[in-house]
Length: 201
Image (cartoon, rainbow, N blue to C red):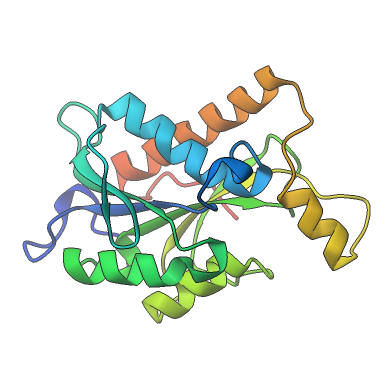
């Protein structure tokens, strides 16, 4: 797969990376497993001092530097609901003129135990409707993923799984904060090194 642009983005690109947190808008979904992508992107926004979000591309959008001297990045929290995330991502990607390899999607991953974070480029969607929508919106699977492990229930029943991901964490608050921090750390490393030091799938 192609290497992402990183700090050496092509001149035609306005940012080195478009970082997308997946989730659902509104208070009802705050602090749920499915919204951990929102939480991680808000954490890196805090770390980087990127705080001027505005309503664009059917979501919350901001641009800035990934820390002092870091590459220029765009942050996006789609407000289209999870299943339509690709519409928001596609609009932002088109406006910013970035390649799929410059898109980083942060999302919940039930196939990883709670607390485990993995970074990968490309691959399937494993039934994650947000990832499926992003893949369709970009017409490519070559975007980066920061997979945030939230565990899975002891059932494969779709309704039980849906309730699980849409439910709030039952782990201790300190453990949830550690998970968000670990995912933010992984995201920062990915942006800083252009993916060269990314973890395996």
